[in-house]
Amino acid sequence: AQAAPARKTGASSPAAVSDTLVGQRYYVNAGVYSAADNAAKAQQKLQRAGLPVVVQQVTTNRGERSRVRAGPFATAAEAKTAAQRIRSLGLEAVVYHHR
Image 1 (cartoon, rainbow, N blue to C red):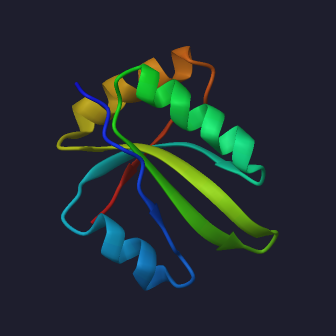
Image 2: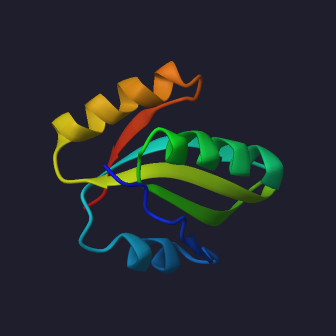
C-alpha cells in the first residue's frame, strides 16, 4: 500500500475531529505526542512502512498534542494486521473504530 500524505487538522472541538473522520471506519492510534519532533518521527516510521497516516492536533487537559494514527482501514482485520506491523516498529498500536 502506498503511504498517504499526512493530514493535519485543527481539533479545537470534537466536531473538528469527527468531520475529518466522517465515512472512515478503522484507525490504529500510534501515539499522542507533546513534542512535534516525536510526532514527526512516528509519522515517518509509519510512512516508511507503507501505512496511510493521519496527524491531528488535539487539545488535552495537558495542552496541545499531536495524535498520530494509521488508517483508515476498511475492516477490523486490516486494522489488526496494521497494528501488528506498528508494534514491530516500536510504537503503541490501539485499534480504534470510528462510527
